[in-house]
Image 1 (tube, rainbow, N blue to C red):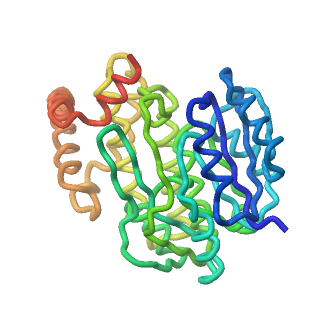
Image 2 (tube, rainbow, N blue to C red):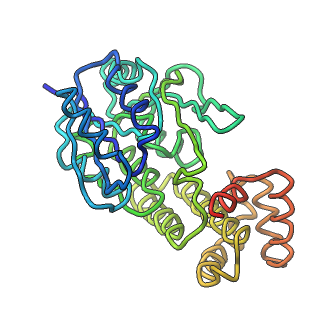
Length: 331
């Protein structure tokens, strides 16, 4: 019986794919299937996938035309047969005992979702992400709350999900798909276990999807944050304020990305975000969970959008913000 299905969407990652796949296949936990979705790669990624399928009976390969990360993961979910589901990004590397740890914790604590810590690696910088110290057990509402307030990561690669809990959940393209999948999964789960041990190495490269410059797809982040807010109001009303803060922060983040790149170029999207933020004109003053710099920034934006944009760019250049890195990566 297959205990775990590991799904890896792949698009033009030939330079990094061997390291990633070797780190999966050399796991101390061995009862898994590795589902590789070659999402229309134009480099040697497809051939590398085929090589590993011939090399290891646990590997299954699906070749499809390019449809994006969400469609690739959904293709993997459609054929997954494991008791648990895991996801890996094709240029990252796993610690050898990652899945042994996640499976053991899931079984020991009877949890539908099992989570580990992450090492985030960027040029010249390494961060350990996760927050809590020691193993922590969450109930459903506690886990959704932790996701909304940033205690739990928005990604899915450091988690495994019990298949029976998430079998009806699909990724929604084109951006923010991990966040919404997490939200739905945690909302469906009754028990979640978090272990801060660092087991996943997330490697952020200049060509990574998360370093892409702004385009219209970014608007999907605000669509899904609003959807999360609506669902929370209906199903977890005690968390409504946290969902509002999350939606506010999401809209402000997209606004900042637009302004750091080009308000003129993305004017219709700018107007849409500005209109979304108007709904928080009074709420942001008293809302708990909004950081002071965002609260004051929003106040400045309401008073003078032009001055806000000038201050934002000055701050970005002074701190070498991710917004500048996105812009540089696009040029």
